[in-house]
Amino acid sequence: MIGMNACVPFLPLYVRALGVTDFAEAQRWTGLVYAGAFMLSVVAVPFWGRMSDKYGRKLMIIRAIFGLTLAMFLMGFAQNVWQLFLLRIFQGGISGFIASSFSLVSTSTPQHKRGWAMSIIQTAVSGGTVVGPLVGGAIADAFGVRSLFLLVAGLCFLSGIVVVLYVQETPDMHPNKDAPHILDTVRFAWGSSFLRRTLLMIILVQAALNFTPPILPYFLESKGAPAELLATITGASVGLVGIFMMLFSARWGTLTDTHGSTWVMLRILPWLGLTTIVQGVIPHYVWIFPLRAIIGIFSSAAIPTLYTALSTNVPLQRAGSIMGLASSATLLGSFIAPILCSWLTAEVGMVWGFLVSGIFFFAALPVALSVNPHIQKSPASPSTFTHTL
Image (cartoon, rainbow, N blue to C red; front, side, top):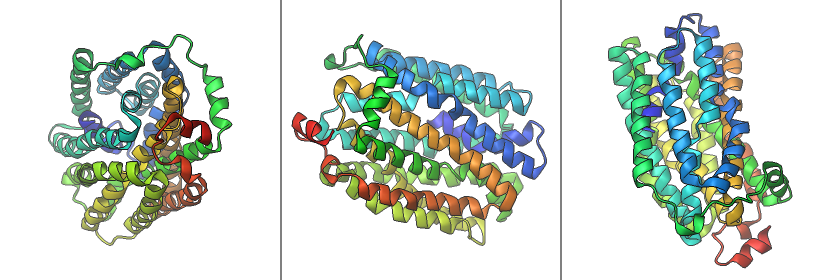
């Protein structure tokens, strides 16, 4: 995550460096490049989820991290924006490291501790979100954006070595050669109102979280950020979110275990929606920092809480497949958001990107209210699962 966050926030600057200088055209291409990583992964992740049930979750983590290593290395040598776009599509099809990690942790942790465990993984993700943009911004300003991708490839490779040497699956997670097929898992999920609504919430929340990053450097520039420090300021604003995610994610995880995911979602969504909308009307770029801190506090609970709700309410033999669907929902939100944002902001202005992002958060509220609260707490026994599904 240090590596990924050292380069992804600066993709808009790489688009410029590859020769797209017209402002509106750069916005459109940035949205496509952001979305490229999610185009193929929306379809690929459920397949990899089934493979994790069938052949083991550690193997899928290894495949994902070394696939990401290759994709990042090749991006560092892209000669035009089309090559960058195609390599992002390749990245999405072959990677999925974080999704695989969430699946491994969720299925190897006792149910009454899963909210806490998922928040620990979120803290690790947030730690990368803190350090990565700060490092990436400084390197981009000093050596150019292209150098970031080679740095990412090296860090991903080191992560892969750590997984190979030290990550172990628990004895009750042996591969299941008779893992359900993808279509069977889709039918299973569609037949449960809880799963349908939780997956819809994941799409809405992830779309909201990923709506404005493609325009953030351009937005900060329009609010007075100096050009020579634009990458550094962008990195700092992204890293600030990660700092507060690290500080608060474990607390939200404990609250999820205690009160349930619906209780948590109803408390974070209004704050996320309101703060996101206010970002769009700030008079100067320095105002972005306190608002990003608030977003970090509440966004640290969003996706881990929904993943916890899923992981505590599915049978172990379907865990990888269902978490694969959850990852697809996450990726679908990530895919929709940058394309819609780049088109919208190029046509009517960047303030609309923040407005629509906030609306997505508010749209998730009635869905959260409609979810049966009895299935949101970590079930104390297998009978709870039978009752809820």
